[in-house]
Image (tube, rainbow, N blue to C red; front, side):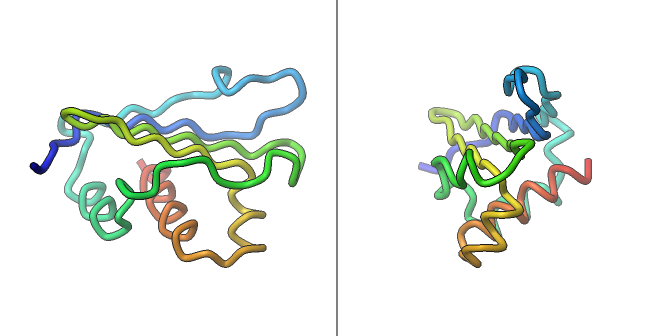
Length: 109
């Protein structure tokens, strides 16, 4: 069964000492904000199969933080990424590059 995307929430920013992820702004995409461009990159990157936590919380300061939540009809996909830039640079991992590409697409909006 193919599930529909109900909403996408994206949080990103730099966490300084004493800050919490809840202090960062959240972008929410639903309805018409889920453009064909977002849907296309979502499909191209296979992002729904990338759930998990990536990166190293201690790899840099301030802490670069990204959290992506994709709400589907009957499921939720969550991706948390710590120090995305450093991690992609040091690992050169294809899966991480795909996650990065999707997060960049959301940052355009």
